[in-house]
Length: 91
Image (cartoon, rainbow, N blue to C red; front, side, top):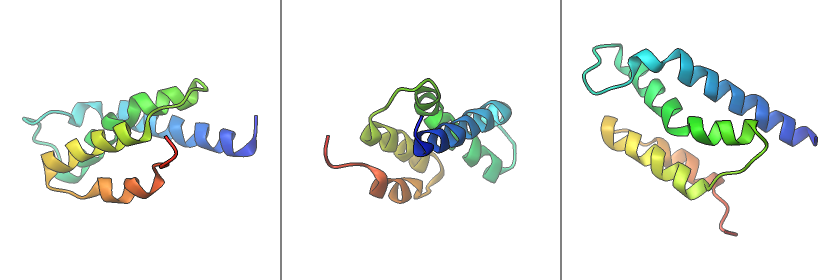
């Protein structure tokens, strides 16, 4: 396995684990710390993509950014703008 693939899997595993740890902060009725709720929703938005990388697969970057945009709308954030530059235009 190339070094970059190992690195991607390690980071993906981190996202997946964070999503599991923050599961209790999901939902619009949750009264938890707003920053923790944002982190929970961001990790949730990308956990399926992280799992795909862990399992040796790929995912559609543009669709992943769309999921992040949904989190932006929920919290009036701008996370997606920081992810967009990582999407390949080669698709």
